[in-house]
Amino acid sequence: EVVKILGEHSDEPNPAAIQVAARRHQLKRRAIDSQETPLQMIEKIFENSSQATQLVLPSCEGDRMRILLFGRESIGDWIGLVDKIYVDGTFSLSPGCFYRIVVVLAERADFVIPICHALLPNKTQDSYARMIELIKCAWPAFNPEVVSMDYDRGLMNAFRTKFPAAEIQGCLFRLVKNLKLKLAELHLMGRYRNYDAFGLNARMIVALAFVPPTELDNAIAQLASILPPELMPVLKYFEDTYVGSLLHLLSDGSVIRKEPMFPLSMWSVYNRTMSGEARTNNHAEAAHRRLQTEFGVDHPNLWRFIDGLKRVQHHRDMLLARCLRGSPPTKKCRKYAVVDRKLLKLVTDYGNNTAVDFLKGIAANFRMEA
Image (cartoon, rainbow, N blue to C red; front, side, top):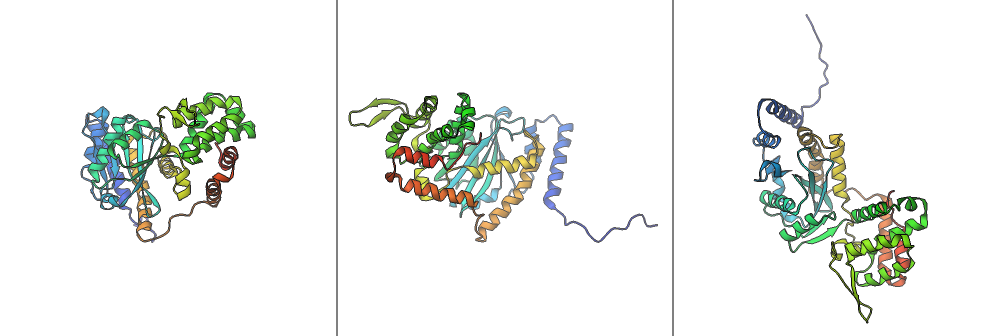
């Protein structure tokens, strides 16, 4: 008796999907049958994985302060060739038993490739330092010359301590976001949204990041002379946090300032604009969005988190393969390329305009989404 006739079509086997399903089943079974903590379960499940394919490296701290690092051991074969990395953390994607997830990306031949994710118990400098030590333990040749990151003092100080010769670059997008938060704190976002002139004036404060460093004090003074009174507290916040509070005005017009929270070398994008370097950490933001799409929820549980990492790894392997065979990276969107050319022209011609006109020109080329 014929019960069912099978058609000729069948999907190709997917070893990765089979492995993911098996790992997930093991995690669920251990959760039911054992008294292990979630972190202990993860380590046990992954300890037999192919180390050429997947690396899960725990720190040696107690369970509450444990850090987990996810990546490919094979990255160690070429990580020594990498000069620039991008680092960014987020709270919403971390599993419930961790406070933060940090993604590290490496720039190689104009490609920017995620190389590892770290789950951290908090965002202290000590935890960031231990994360860096884990990365160095996994890949001893890891020695970046440039590190692009968010404005996080703990993260900044940890990388400064571990790599004192490295250049620390702040993300312009996050600088804009911080200013937007300050506007919201002062209840000024309504005016920003509804009055174009006010919005332009607000963005002129962030546009100070494009001013030649030697001209910054003069640009701040000129900007202060034309800003509406409501924006003066925002300018003071920017000055105190990123430039340094004014201590003394000398007879020759020069100024002495207090040490800022974030140094000029970190947030100024003047040299980066002149040399065509990236001004933002958008590659890291894109990596977070990709994971968010895979998870489908904030704060996924541990096995959903691991499943998501495994699924996005295929895309990253393809990205690395394109890089290795000499393919060009994806072109920048045309509208952003046009903005880049405008910004470069403005920065190059800085001496041909007043500081106020320069800041207006820069501010006209970006928005703070309200």
